[in-house]
Length: 120
Image (tube, rainbow, N blue to C red):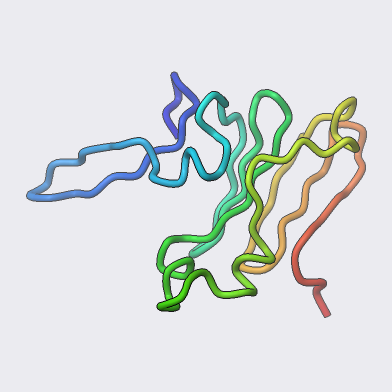
């Protein structure tokens, strides 16, 4: 995430030169006019919180494109574009945590919300 802009970037490193570019999922995730203020990620999944209070969860392109005919159903069901949850409209996100299958947040008032696969 660009510190000054709050935009999501991706980059390649060729011949030791890093070339950041806007992330290819920026439009699909609804992040074009948003400023990212919190990010949490693990090996293949990330969740973001924007300045407007929206939340995004997505998987790395490695898993998104691993099937010839599209995104695997589990990956699709555990991902979502920018969403404004009514529960967060007056109680902003304080902490954001993510793993391969679950995201949870703790709000400033101490409420805990989660989505993904329920841990057993």
